[in-house]
Length: 279
Image (tube, rainbow, N blue to C red):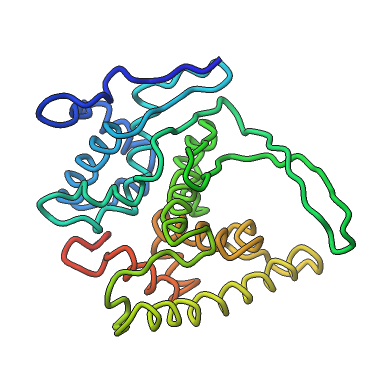
């Protein structure tokens, strides 16, 4: 049975309903990486989150009752990557990155999805994949509520399933999840979109290959495991999403481990201006 939260997210005259201050403070307390913002950034993130809640619809699966606190926890993390992307007078314009869907399906635990793949010999294989979240191209976002909560207690690992799935949505705006989202005009000084794309590839492709090698050496030969989540070694799109998680949750550690990727993400998310995170 599905239960849909619509109580206070509905559009009202005069704009979206404000998030109660007590609920907002509780959300910030639970997620340490949301407590590093300036006063102006807090206000901007709250406004973005209110508009996000006004535009999205949460559905609880398997009898889960989605509460306001759950919805705000998702909204605050989903809007963190957008914090510097909208204009100063209307930061909510940045929500266009998420315009291709409305629904967010919350599960009471990790979900199990049936998968199929064909091997090199043409034999079809079926298996079950356990998912903490999933972003569907042109469709809803699925999230496990326990996984959403875990981000509050695993900040040192650079973990946030919400950020992970929502930057997948940003990546998909380029036509598919491939680890290369649409780049802003003038990205890293590029004079054209093609030049920007080439710069992105030259930065990310070698980093991905090095990371894959680290993961293989750790898993097969007992070498030290990399700090970044090994799931990022499964595909360029996953490497991008895992990198973005770490970039927002543990920006200093991520910059130490991946200085070139950190610079690229700061440029992509427009964090180098006066409202830059941790600035």
